[in-house]
Image 1 (cartoon, one colour):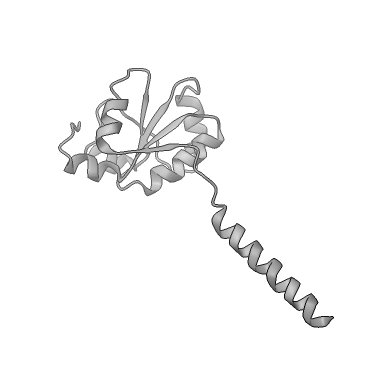
Image 2 (cartoon, rainbow, N blue to C red):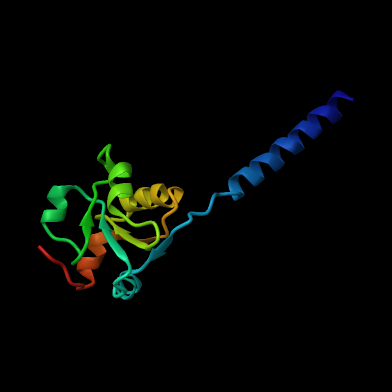
Length: 132
């Protein structure tokens, strides 16, 4: 009887572990390559947002982008103030990590978000336009 209880506990624990590992939450934003991101931002309705620091932004950015530093405590409030929830947001950072975090925050707030996969560094390496 005790062995049966342990066996059932073991089976349940294994099943729980299997489902917990496989049930990764899907991000509600879309990652785009440099080429796809470039095509997307041709649409004037798309809001371009650089989430790097002011210093990084001043060293070069995608033309027409707005700088809202995701590391700033005021990021969420600034996004609410400066961005229109009715228009999609194209977001990027240096490598893609900070912008993914910002994209998650913005999607939770109801924005439709597109993230530049591999970030601004990859954008520059691809020979895309930048602005100083």
